Length: 296
Length: 256
Image 1 (cartoon, each protein chain N blue to C red):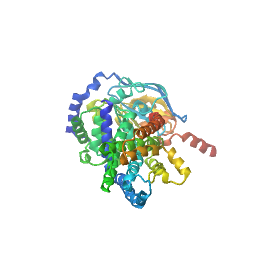
Image 2: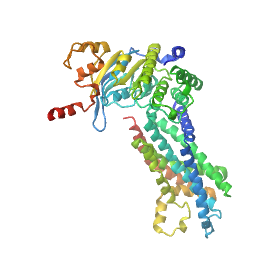
Image 3: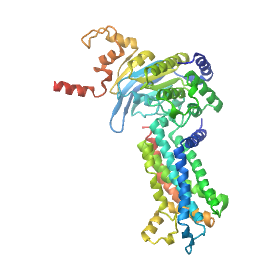
Image 4: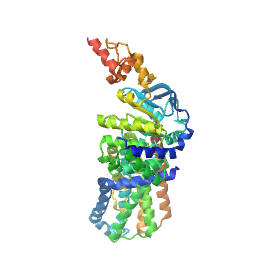
């Protein structure tokens, strides 16, 4: 999907403008016992600690309601933590939210776009709010739209675009200021397989070429497998296990949760092994299973 | 980037966005102009009553029409904010180095500029119908400013708070007809001396909109009454002191 020549140009632009990375610490992201309890008493995140190196690609995996979006929301300064600490690019997410925002891009689960704006206008505004000059914003928007192969929709209003195209525009807008850290909340949720594959290709190339630190949430195991150096599995707001996809799979090779020894484990098997339930079971799985057992 | 350029960028976005929604554009201007023409024609005879301050009813009605443009009109700011919440764009903007206050100010500035144009259209129509602004262009500008400020501290604040609470553009839009009640319960169509009901006169006297409409009408018909202008500004300031902290608190909850 990604246009190679344009990507090379983007790398050159990044080399010229990535002053922010100069001061970037080794640990791009540090979480210490980070927690969030909402006003209604829901404990969405129950004390997560982890460290992400600069340039690393980290996947937060878990089913809907596991606490993935809340975790990434806290790191992106959109959700205020109620416990613990988090530092992004060396800045505390509560004490220095503006400094954090200067150094991150954030593409949301629900593509956050202005339907009345054109793709180009949306990106230029995003760049200008990040402090880019008008001409630089226009040039960079054009370049990123070409990188994402979206130049044909540059002048079209977002209301007229498909969900998948909006997601790509949103992602492109998140890269306008060439941030060293990018958060992606369920980047391919609801997309058809072709669009998913296209976004994966783009993210993979951008990450490798630009050296950005990538944090993504997903409940697609293949997505985590494909894009992430390390994966953390979250269940009920707790980090259950983390490691490289290969290491996680290796820990369960030979186990027999389904009465058949696993010789080529998948991430689904890893999730089942560590949480005791399949990934697609959702938060209410135990309750339903208990009822089934009682009925039997 | 400092706050001021960000506010201007966001105000520009509000101004660009508005005419791209033809329904919003048409229905925020046309009904006011039509009401002005219809009510002006229907009640024209009122101006023949003894003691009425002008013999041109359109002249009397013009300040009320300005309020009809600005008070319900500023509610569109809340509708747009509700739409931004629904689409997720509000949070997208919050991932840039900006603040909730900057986002609010940008939206408000853009909508105030839009309302100024709409109110000016009303005045131009009034002049075309033979009305005369006694205090000239400075008075006309003050009239529009008073009307816009009243809109901000009443339906501007209400719609903004509803937007953050409901995060639903339709819910915000649903309360807009209440704005007409606020304006109709004033001396918008006839002087209070001509209203028989004592209860209604008391309600009108208690209505803050009446204390802003009064100096606006004086600017249109007779000249500067600085005492009434000060009263109008005090009413606006009082309402602002009531609603702005509440609005700020509600918007802080957008980051919770």
